[in-house]
Length: 190
Image 1: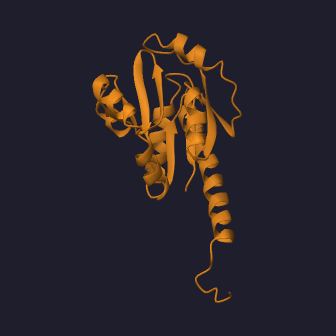
Image 2 (image 1 turned 90 degrees about the vertical axis):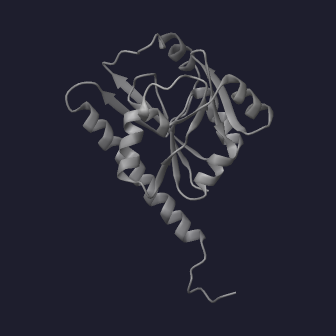
Image 3 (image 1 turned 30 degrees about the horizontal axis):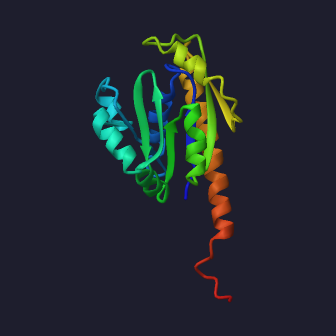
């Protein structure tokens, strides 16, 4: 099973933009892990990240045990479908924005997460989500990497370049480890 690149950062820190850029660069290697949510859609781009459901449908799916994790954030419910995640990770790397509380649930479900902190500079949190961001940030985490996303000229490009480098390094090391453990087609020993 392939690992997940989990981006963690406050609202408005650029996680969505970075995820879209990475999937655009590596469409054959990387796919977005979608969440189910009860929040309203903010626009067409949201369809790439979310399955929108009613609170009743959300609770029904939770009761049926479909969720790998679920959380409430800023008054809305979010969850990740266990079957959908495992199917995706059987074929390619996953990438998603994660909230701190969901990381242990992904790990408990057997997912390997490469945790990347998105550290914004000169950004403003939208929609009054600053308090929820502050509560989430209290959770201590051990990050594998950090990307600074500056909302200044060339900041976006620097963040994309930094995250691209992190992903490339993991692609190479994962591929090398897989080659060393997988049987070779021409291996006639045994």
